[in-house]
Image (cartoon, rainbow, N blue to C red):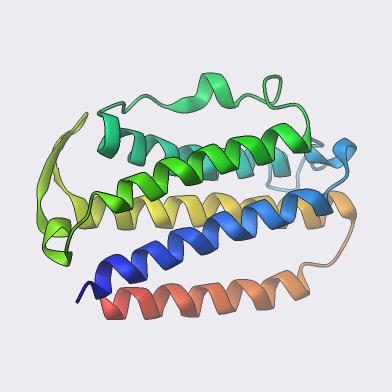
Length: 174
């Protein structure tokens, strides 16, 4: 049984789904609007969503094709300037991620070491770190969107608490 793989796959799929579903709810003029200075959020909703996806792309590009480059250059707001282009990028990242998960044949694979730019690393901690960083960027995206819309983050805060519980559950299972 591949409980770890299934659990991680489900968490990454949920991350993708939440990001993808959020894009159509954002008007093009809000996609890259930066919050007011002093808000503690120097980047826009769109920039945070792209960083979340780029984090996943970098890890799974490394796992599947040994391409560990930071996708920064092709994930600039100037390149992905519309909601449709952002969704297209998210779909590409999800395809890469799924391909990566297809390579895992059993939970024991997650205990293997691979050669990453920083040196040898075990797959499981790499995937967990990637997930935590990507979820962090996504959370910042949602908070930023609330700020530029002038909404309270109370509802989003309740969703964040649920996400925190889900992440705790994941770590407990691991």
